[in-house]
Image 1 (spheres, rainbow, N blue to C red):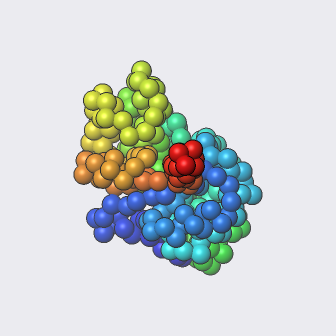
Image 2 (cartoon, rainbow, N blue to C red):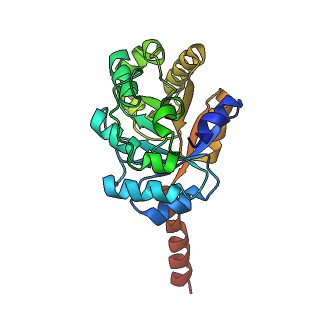
Length: 256
């Protein structure tokens, strides 16, 4: 089976950088995958991406050595299995609140006897290789999102879930759950204290920890803090950055 390069990177003791796709389109995913990330996540939760678009984007990413991840819309076994069968090499699952929910998520990603994933890796075996079924349990990554007050309170039990590879913090929802504003790259002391609590629990349990960020500077701060995965940039942010050029040109024309 094709090795999961993100898993190998972590095994070597190195952090990883992740790109994020919110817009549907094979070519945009291909562009993101050629930017130098270790992994690229296709966001089917808050992105504008359906199953057919996700499949085309996984195919585009597979032209590179980048690890393809998918954030599913919810902790639904059928949806998780479809993303894996399409070739996702890792699943980010939102809104995990306790160990029971986390176990259900992990088991949906694993074939028996480790879980209850149904056998039918239609495209996954093409991408992963003929021995995909025998080795998938050891290669597929499971990342549970902690982004609620309940998830934060239950973090020690969540990270103790057998087969869980890591936690991915959703800072905007976590901030909302703690009574703060939504948004990325916040430095609020209470939110950073929550980060540190999750970080300590992950390190104690021997699982990886990632966080959604929105800039290289904040990503570097999080890596220095001990995180294993940071999402540095997204397709929508890069496209929106073009607004500055439009404003600059409009101002120049107006001043002529």
